[in-house]
Length: 283
Image 1 (cartoon, rainbow, N blue to C red):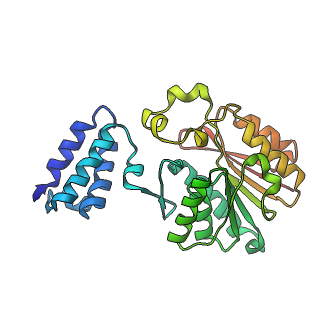
Image 2 (image 1 turned 90 degrees about the vertical axis):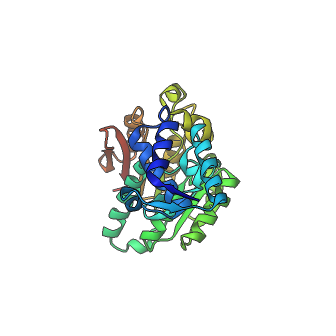
Image 3 (image 1 turned 60 degrees about the vertical axis):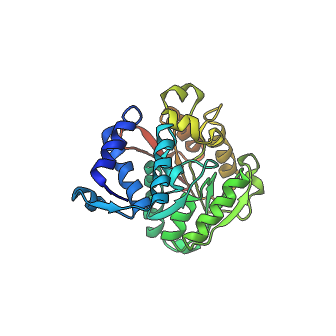
């Protein structure tokens, strides 16, 4: 069968108008036609007609149905892009966010400027899909390891590491048992669960209904940061810590690490002006 891409886009916008803005829907449409029809955004702008096999079109329609029911496009396609890496995702892990790429970029920029940087071991705590660890391993020569409490997340992270052709050490481990972590890192990176339950109403329904709550919510918003803080305070080999933060508790987290070394703590804001990232280093 042959169909106009502009007709498909119009249909998608109509069916998802109560879920996504026009700009979001247009972006999703480009992802869909690239994935299912191997068409490009240029093809769409040219209003190209494409030949589609019936079974492929049925898969496309099924994807639209899942979108209408609020399922994130990344879960439908089974992957997303993160820091120039293709990361497989499913409902066992959070979908990597562009905000977290900022954290990775901070680490990469700093490590590349450090003396004897290749000797520094990096650990990603609460790795999920493995996106942070994999992005770091793809950019740096440093040994990278990662932990997560979920065996399913570890399994997926291992697949992602293999498909991106990087080596990372993976360990199934709860942050409550950080002292059992294999090796002793020089650099810790983490984007732990930090959304407070009182914030649940502010989240999109596609996040609430589909992404794993264990990776999103923290009943005590400081709990995981305190676990990392206690480990760092005890293990003086850790020289650098990079964390993604909830802006509502950013100052409290910073206060923990400033109690070790006040002058070694920096906070950065995200695109919306919220305190979102922390860097601490031992002087």
